[in-house]
Structure formats: C-alpha cells, structure tokens
Image (tube, rainbow, N blue to C red; front, side):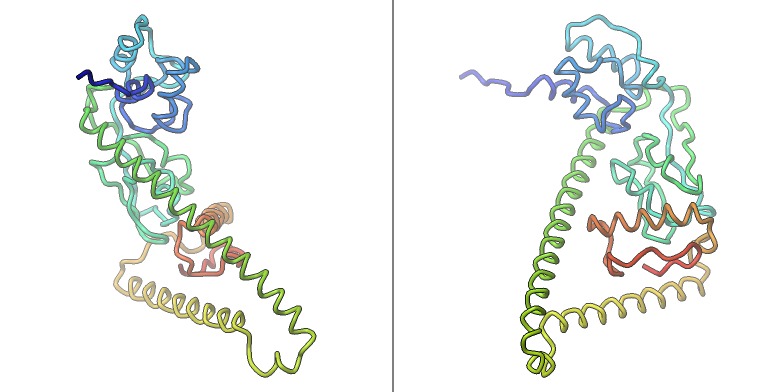
Length: 288
C-alpha cells in the first residue's frame, strides 16, 4: 500500500526554519513566513537567524539557486540571550506580553526574569520595555545561524509558540464571552430598571438581583485589593518588593497603565479592578 505524504510545501518550508519567531522576515511568525514563501510572495532569503545555511536549505527544497541573505531583514550573527536588569525592572509585564515563546516569567509590579534555555534571542522584548532594562548579549561565541542553534531547540521553540498561541486564543474567546455576558446583563438590568419605574414601591421593598450582584462584586474587588495591599507591604518589609515602581515619569506610567488596561480588556490579567475604572495618575498606581 502506498502512503501518501499530505504535508504541504509550507509545512516543509516551516520545518527548515529555526522557529525563533523573531518577525525579522517581515511576517508575524515562522509559519506565516513559510506560507508566504510557498505562495511565492516572499523570498527564501529573509530569515537572519537561519543565516546562510538556512537560505541554502530552503534553496535546495525549492530547487532554486543559493543567494545571499537579504540585508534588509538583518544580518547573520551569534545568537543573543535576553537578560533583565532586576535593579531597573519595574514589573510592567510588557516584555512578557511580547515574548513569542513564553520565556519570561514574572507578575505585575514584581521582578521578571528570563528562562535562558527557552529564550530564542528574538529581540522582541527589548522595544516595549519602558525603562530599557533588557540587554541582548551574544552567548554562542563566533557561532552564527544554524551553528548557534539546533533542530532540537527549534522544535521546542515551535511547540512553545504554538501552545502560547492556543492559550491566547482561548483567553480571547473567554474575554469575548465575558463581555457578551456583561452586555446581556446590562441590557437586562436596563429593562428591569425601566419596568421598575412604573412600580417604585415594589422596587424599594427589595433590591434587584442585579444590584445584589453588583454589591457582591464590589465586596470581592475590595477584598482582593486589600489582600494585594497587605502582600505588597509584607514584601516591602522583607526587602523583596520591586524597585523603581514609585514616582516614575509620566510617559512610563502612561505606557504601563495602557498595557494593563489592554490586558484587562483582553482577559489576560486578573480582574482586580473594574475594567471601566480609568488608570491612576503617575506615581500613584493601585495595587494589582
């Protein structure tokens, strides 16, 4: 019996990419780039992490001549590693949100750190950092391209990226479901309020279910805020609190508040405050 290989050309191209998910090729990840090359919409010499060997691999697959790496996409170089200066880090989480392979761990207003063996050296965590606390030193000596990377590392990076994309998709769907539920609840509350206008006496006798739910929510939020405040005080007393979180510049604070607002809207952060509450002024952030 003949076994038919159902893998597409894009699958084969993707298998030859280093899976750093760095976007230097001009596409949001390795898979979209592979698909663009397969369609003939992108050159097979646009992957700096793959370097000259990567171009040669793709050329052999596509039956094309080996050409130089496109300098517009970057240069072949030793693989770098993201390093966070914890004395400067303010715990804004922007680097965590940018990392395509979940190689950074931390929590809002707590120190972040990079898991060295998971970092692909993509550089994507550097631009969003508002305090420039991330450096990218080379860690592979003079080895570049595929000499500075392995197939095992590429496979592991692809798996982490795929898991991250699946998780973000689930979180977006959950956030959309919660938003739809809130809209439905608001519409029901508005309809109930309109009905209660005709019978003010009965409305004053007992609170509506909507008002009881709102009161319960406020109580839960207040309790969460109090726990967060106490935890922050305990960490500060032990000298374990994050540095540089107070009296930051207005520009830095605005970036942090905007990021946290986006995370709440997308359901990517714990709802410790009402999503409709405006961000606090610079230097007076509410604990999360």
